[in-house]
Length: 237
Image (cartoon, rainbow, N blue to C red):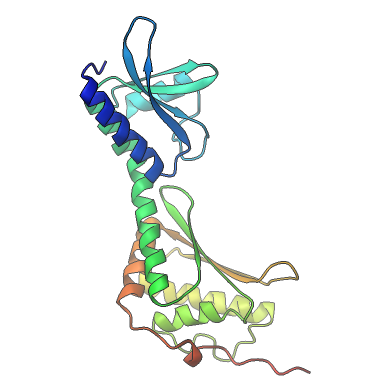
């Protein structure tokens, strides 16, 4: 049990900040027990980004497997994790929250790199291992074409009719090859034609390491004039 009050306040702040930065939905608080003890508690409020089921038995098993000095129990229907020492708090942050904090920081680096080139894309950190970059564009996927140009393939859309599903699919294939060279094998690329209620979409599925490499590559490339990379418009029939 952590007994020093100044340590408790500092550790509460440290743990709460780590929970927030990791994108975990949870409550961190100090609780007085009936016998006058003060406990630091973390209550997960969602299963998302929690590496164990929300029951004390599985949580205890995970804590033991990761050498985290903490106890798990039910309180008023919620799972509660209570670190038993200062080292337990830091180990809990390192083993549970740390990977998500890192993934979120990498996602933020990619957002910054895209903004540097005025590329509109939604970066979503799915978990501690994978990130989605979604480019939605009603203008024949011009933003995706511009991304290709930033990565050195200014002709990535040459000969493609990007207003058609087949052309979009071919662009996805070319983008997959380009990204393989830029960040490594295994990048998922999917093109989805739009409809009346949704724009055309190119979705990239990357590992966190690939995301970091992509952010670094984009950030070091010179700005490309979008007018030089926009696919030709298709004349009306």
